[in-house]
Image (cartoon, rainbow, N blue to C red; front, side):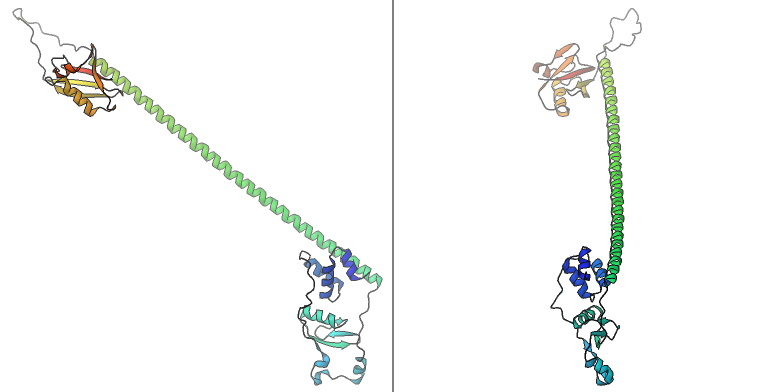
Length: 314
């Protein structure tokens, strides 16, 4: 069985086997090495148009260098091969010499009477076994390398997965902390608002209670029986408190001779509950003031020294 067929049986394509043998001077070992190195390359035919290196035979050398004895000249009359003068390898013919030159860059060759002995069947089988074992070894090494690379890729993938999970977990924890902090602040703000509202309601109730309670008159000292009547206290100012529809209150002092219209105008200018039409109402005793009451003085309406009025929407 030829070297070419042996390589075919090993699983290589015909095109690559031809190319490997051609580029390696039909050397089985070198051809196999070449095939293993170029196993993953696409099949490409040998470039026939590739420029062949110029071979220099001994006959083309200067006369002083190429002169031989008569005995050698007679032997070279029937050359059996070519010999590379640079490395000493014996080549079958000019084609193999050309391939050798293409591979090594050697260009000096001479004719030789040596013959390339064909390999025996035993040598071929031995070489085949040796090459097969080498091929198995190389394939095993390649498989082990691929397994190692795959294992490393899997380790890297798992590491990246763990890192991604850690990033997601950290983001989730930070988000939960942010939400919890926001809820805590909202709860505190709500509690503070309720506290202030309760305090305001309590103050309003106390103020309303105090304003609607009849003032306690100071104890009148006993006067002699000759006293005809109690003196009446005179006031120059009147304190008016007005509660708006939004719950806010306003307080202002007026002259006792000011008309109720002055109070109404002051409310219109300073109110904080809008601009809708309204009436002024006294809660106790209950009285709704009309347009006729607007021209009356605060003293005439009995609002002196202090009174509380309520704004009511019409």
